Length: 278
Image (cartoon, one colour):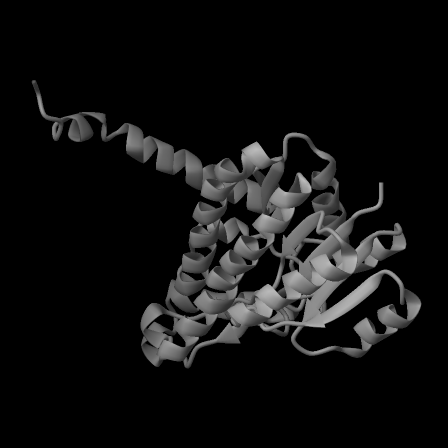
């Protein structure tokens, strides 16, 4: 059965890979962009009936609501939302400017929240749908030099886990995608780096500079393969809540959660010591 997908940030990376694969299989994509690149213009020529490109700045709530309203009006339904728009921000907490902080939270966190909030009524009224949030294994595992990116990803994962429980009665599934490093513009082009301070040179905080330099080796993740796996989650029932993509990402996530669990299990007596004893 052909579906209608609303995908944010289709100009590059996962958004472009997802859009290309979905159009090839005959589905309709309502794709949002901040700037329409030549590749997207070519896709519009190739799929004039099934690709609907809309301008959207996800930090603008009014634009979000208008895009969703237009999508429902022009296509009758939204079967799947993929919240993909976002970027990485690198630097120590004190290296970041107020603008750095406000912009990434408005894009990676509240932008995704508002898009989900706008789509839920549409899916509830039509009797169901699927929400896919592109997060990162950085929504479970934190590294130095990425504090605000982690803040956004940990935050959106908590939001989605709560919303997933709220929308179950309406046949709406929620899936959080947690990719590892992939060969996309996210790492090799669109990454934002703070004004770096020499005090953090030769410390773990600036280790990300090596990762951002492709001459040191490329990320292992194949964005096209990842896009295929993301699309496949829509046919799973019930919707998987967490999907990790990439063997290194899964290993790091399991290691961190195992250590976190052991830490909590070691606090059994401490936690009980604060209970009121009747």
